[in-house]
Length: 283
Image (tube, rainbow, N blue to C red; front, top):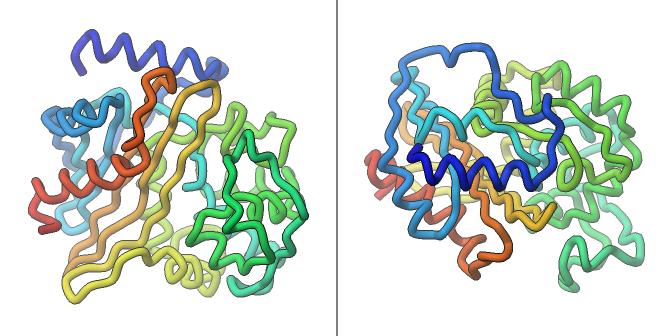
C-alpha cells in the first residue's frame, strides 16, 4: 500500500474509535501459497474508497490478496453478520427454520437504519436475509442473548468477539470487528461443514445465501453496510462455485462520509466482479 493511502486508511480506522485490541492484526501466518496483487487497488481508487479484497482459491489452495495490511484489519461486519446470525438463530432454536415469520415491532430507528418502508411488515427470516431487513435480525438477537453469541462466536473463531456494545445490534455499532481474511476463513469452514452447527442448519444457510445461479456458476453471498462514526464500511462476502472449483472472497470498502458518493453501495459488487474478471473466473 502506498504511503499516502496507508495514512488515509489509518485515519479512517482511528476515526472509528476501536479499542486497541480490536485493531491488532492476527499473529498467525496465512497458510498456503499467497499472491499479492496491488493492482487491484485501482478499482477501489476509481470508486473513491480505501479497501481490500481477500480471495481463496480452493482448488489451487492459494490466497490472492490486494494487500498485506488491510486484509488483516478488522472492522464492523455490518449485515454480513447475518450469515452467522442465521446459523446461531437456527442452532439455538430461536427459530424453527428459515421460513419462520417475525412480527414487525411497529417502529425502527430511521436515523440509524435509513427509511425503508417496503420492509416494515411481518417477514420471514429468509426474506429478511435476502432484502437485508436489519430489524428482523435485531429481534432475533434480543432472543438469542449475548451469552449464546459469545459461545458460538468463540467456537467459530469469528471476529474479535467484543460484544461490549449495549444495544442488540452489535454488528453495526460498537467495537465488534472482523477482518477480510477472517471472513474468508469462516466461509471456508461453512462450505466444508466444519462449524459448530448442525449439517442441516448449515445447509439451510447455504441455500439462503444463493444470490446468483447460472449454468456456469453459483454465487452464495451477503452484502453489508454500516455508517458508524461517519465512516461508510461496506462489504460483499461469499463464494463462487464454478465447475470443480470454489473461490471464497471478502471485499471491504471504507469511505469518509464527508466524501460520500452515490455509487458506494454498487461499488462493493462492481469492484469484486472486475477483479474476478481479471482472474478469468467471471466473464
